[in-house]
Image (cartoon, rainbow, N blue to C red; front, side, top):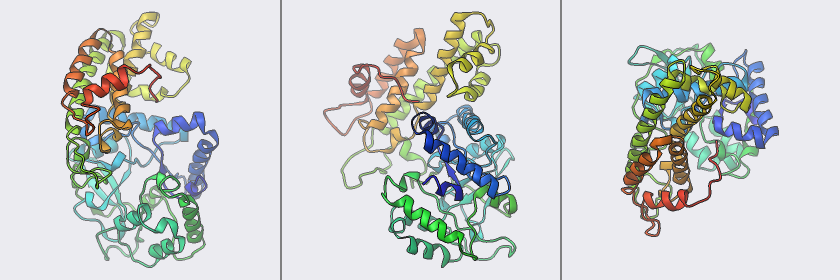
Amino acid sequence: MAASLASLSFDFGPTLLAWMERHAAATYGAVLAADRAGVAAHAGHGNAIAMPYHHTILPLSSRRDKETEVRWGIADFRRRFGREPEGMWLPETAVDDETLDVLAAEGIRFTILAPHQVERVPAGGRPGGHRTAAGRRIALFLYDGPLSHDVAFGPLVRDPAAWIERLTAREGGNGGGGGGGSVDVPEVLAIATDGETFGHHHREGAVTLARVLDALRKRGDVRVDNFAAFLARHPPQDDVRLVAPSAWSCPHGVERWRSDCGCRVHGDRATHQRWRAPLRNALDWLAAELHRVFEREGSTIFAADPWTVRDVYGSVLGAPDDAVTRFIGERLRRPDDRSALARAGELLELERHALRMFTSCGWFFDDIAGLESLIVLRSAARAIELAGTDAARLEAGLLERLALAPSNDPAVGTGRELYVKGIKAVPARGVPT
């Protein structure tokens, strides 16, 4: 799979890359090398695409939290790949106008969306331009919906010949649009799918992908390109309008992450997701309270605005402890105050977990008792621990709200019991980064 990355656009979440850096060094090195290969092959336009730091549904976040997630993601990308990102993949391709405005304000030139997320797909699959309400511009690539579906869920990932035939025997597509357009701009056929398609969902998927890419490189009638390089040669000619808020994995907008919209993994099971809204409401309340703690205490500890410090904290996430300590010390009102140094570190970690507890998988699946929801509650518990004298009040408020989140399993009860028995009663083993 790592070899295939040298021929296509790809993204990895910063938290996954942090794990790979520690536990899969060879694969991690191959990922970085694949981007360097893209830079060399595409006139300086690498294959890697950035991501927000956590896999959160950005349309459900405040602008300030959107900005921090994007800025942390850019900082992590810069540290790992040694260059500025041109594109950013949005978790679940979840988008609204403000999200795109934040990306554009931070220098991101493009993102990739599903065809149903715009009112009209530009002809030939070419990128469209979106002007945000604030007047900023960003390019949108729309992937081919049917073809991407058949790679992720259909037979193509097991049949390289059929895959190549689908790619080369059609004109444009992209699930919409059609012919026409400027004749000097080539048509684009883009596929987007989860990385786990190639190995986790389909055991031989990576082998099939490698064969397809190798065959395409040998043809004279197609060009294997990355998004950044194509955009540099062919800026958007058509404007597109968003359907927002929207995401690629929920036909109801972004309701999968805040309501019982009917989306679930096991559609054949008679389960409800009435727990989703109470879980979202509980963590929204907790985040607001945690932010008040951070602002109140941070304003007395940091020399600069605490929210500015939070934003630039992304530059040392994953760095050695001495670098983090130096970073924090340089931003204190009283650099020699050891207790202030310790508390400043706790406050910044409080904010990291306050953002992390909105990781999208906590709502994606079928029951609050699943591992994914438990993980977001672990982050909530860690953030509460770091809240100091406010901890008892915050935990009581969280429990009160979690009691309104019913599990499908009577033995579990509600989110309150899950938190008490699954987190508080379990010996602490740390919270993954």
